[in-house]
Length: 434
Ligand SMILES: Cc1ncc(COP(=O)(O)O)c(C=O)c1O
Image (cartoon, rainbow, N blue to C red; front, side, top):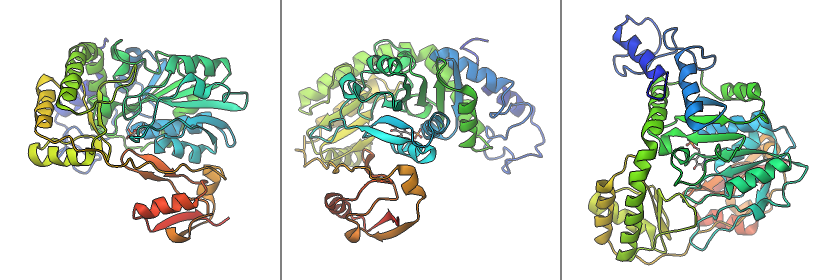
């Protein structure tokens, strides 16, 4: 078996080819969605794989350079939460970016671990900056059990990955990498380093973001011997449906094959196209966001009114960016993009005014006065935002775009945060009763 093979897809295809009379779930019986099966002896079982799914996961581990890889059908969210509950215990301190995705906060709620925030800078356009070694040095000590890094963030900015992983390991901390936006990184040396290549202990990736799997397809990888494999596997199961979608799993098998066989070549072809696109866009007058070593597949035009640009692109050209704000507009260029698709974008931008930016809407920062888990589990009340200053949040509130955290359970609602929530039109907020 080599990376050209797709053992799981083949098993599902063989079953369908038999044209079986199906007296099993799902109720659509394959009439509506032929690829969608339940787990069958012929197609293996995700919780205890012994056949094609085991082979598909082993090929994935080999392709990515991990020791063990598992398929996830509930996105990177499931992987991050699973990592937390298997690795951390109540009260463990975990160093984490302030601007982490909500799944990381959910990891704290589920595990009872307590965040120690790296208060990374956010620039005046509302873009969180990368984490440097100096941001974590001194913060990782004996009482820090682990660190969670995002690689890259939504805007393509990357932490000083290798330096931080080595430093964390030298201090006895484990490193979990949220690589939801970076499943492609390992496959081309011109890209920023992937968490696995930097020897991180657990790396979670959304195959559906930069890979070609169906939405929800994701991977969790383990490398090295700092992680209890069985505990992680149990946690992955704990947070999974017992009816994983065959369609998602098949698409994961294909996506792994595609990244391994075509990832390098596609990125080699795409990188010069992206670099040229970036230069051409700047010539029109749209500033393009650049940071050393970043993942350039994330294209952010900044210092513009991104919302108006986004609206014009849709109304005049039916082009839809990933997200926009008063100060930027973000486009995702995937491995399936080409000179032709990026030229469509370039030509459209030529016909759109460079709208001046509005004021970046940067939420005030919160501080924690209680652990996220105890605040989440404590008795709660839903009260008018107007009355919320001085109370402790019982819920996660994020602002999209780009999903920045406004409040998490255990955070103190200050006057400033209350006013900010009101400015967003929020009328009620969940607070703890304790
Ligand atoms: C940084 C980051 N981590 C994790 C996730 C969760 O990924 P998924 O949607 O695959 O659950 C996202 C989703 O947007 C994300 O942006």
